[in-house]
Length: 504
Image 1: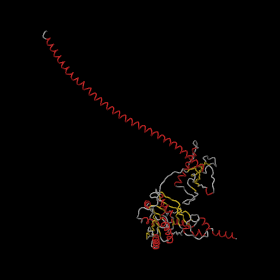
Image 2 (image 1 turned 180 degrees about the vertical axis):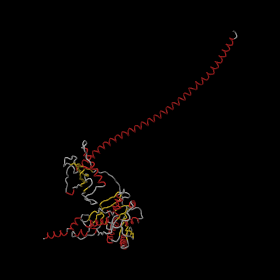
Image 3 (image 1 turned 90 degrees about the horizontal axis):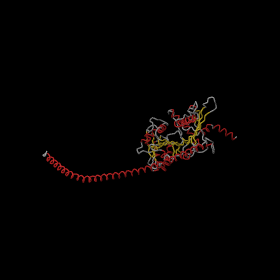
Image 4 (image 1 turned 60 degrees about the vertical axis):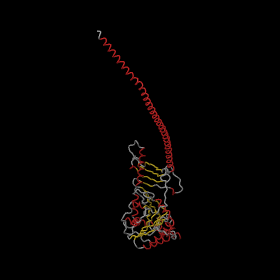
């Protein structure tokens, strides 16, 4: 029993020593940890603090930017709201102004009441129309007293009839039978310059048992207020014109033409080329002598004579004149030897023809036979310049002629010029005109008081085609005198008898 006790003591002693060594060792480590960890924590805390502060700065900057954008958007919204309110007020104002304008047009027209006029010439007559025919007051180009409406006129009348049918049916919402286009009987229309187009339409009565009753609709298509479409500057100072003149014989007329050319083109305008395409040899020397005299007298070198040994063909001559031009694109005036013009016409030629956009087809004033015009008034025939008077006694607007035209060479080539194979009088000008009408070019067709067609005896060869011959005869008959003057000639014997009876 006595021996084990010391062993226990020894073990306890050893355990104590080991405990002391362990405590001593770990006590030193904890001291290191206790001194190191706070330092690391402070450094980490400082890093986190700096990161947080930087993030807060960024967020604050972003918030300020967003607030600024919000303020800008708010200002924009306010501005747009004000603009919208202004537009709404303006629209309402403009709408009321337009409505007032249209109402005024109705009141000034003769729809609701008559309008006092100074004389009978102020009255505008109505044109009568049905579904398929129009009886025009002014026959126009075709000189037809009755015609089938086509194009824009057809669309306009169809719209008016359909609109009227809808108006009538609005009053018959619960009816068993409604108006249709076939119920339209006839109508009249006229265009008044100050108000618009006035239509009156009559429809048959849908109640078959009641006769003598019609449904009437009166419509006004008013002109709108004036609005600006184009405001631009047109410069003509640098624009030269190449006049192409096909010719054969007609030396007396050519002398008159060249005198006018010298007076107008050389002395006044000074920006004109003249290309004379002469057919054959007979008279060629005289033509060259006339042109040389003009060139030497005025020192004007922009004239040339192109000789062609072929039968005369106006379209062929114009085509050759185009092909002989070697310069840059130019404005071309296709002319005839019987035409007289002034400097104002040449300027209109420049103003109304525009490359790739417009071609000019002036309506000439065609003079009657001076022997008839002046002999009927017991007057001597004046000089050509004094004959250039626009009146119903001296001539008429040649609205069926398309030979005189101003257009650019490039546009002529673009539509491929004249049709080959046209022989004899007329045809080539109408063919070219139709090409432009069917193209996207604007055809400016207008009366021009600065260009005249001189009367000359017209011969219509019997070898022409039927259409050409009829056209030639028609032109010849219209060019002699006015309807009234021809009537006086036709009844001259009766008029002379009446004069003799009056003297007795």
